[in-house]
Image (cartoon, rainbow, N blue to C red):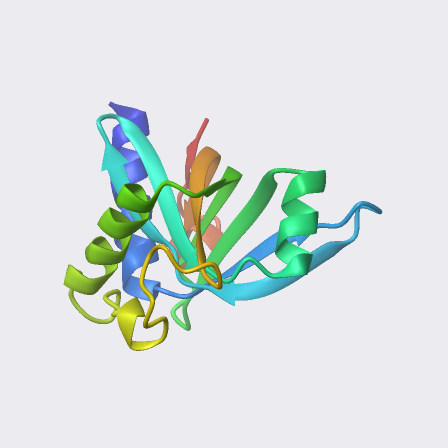
Length: 155
């Protein structure tokens, strides 16, 4: 299935690059970017992204205004992966616990132990969890950029 192939390729590229630029927009339609560290997984046939992050006033206000964000991965070989997503804050502690363990158990460079930074763990109020539901994916490389092949994309 084309969607499944694009999703799997997206995960491969994203998890190899690890850090991505995440852009949101304010109530005036102005973008704001930051570097974050999403973890992607297939939940059945649905791609889901997770970001453990601080619920800063800017992020909270932007996502309250528009629950959409864009994730952009790039590496020096010009491999890129983009995910345009709907984002939602997750307060459910068992889900937060599961995602923290996904990060902790992932191999380097993707893996990260959030307990080393947030000693109170998943229930902490100073850290939260975003669930990302992509509605558009795109993957390119040097051959794509030079017009030698078409990008992988969905839809």
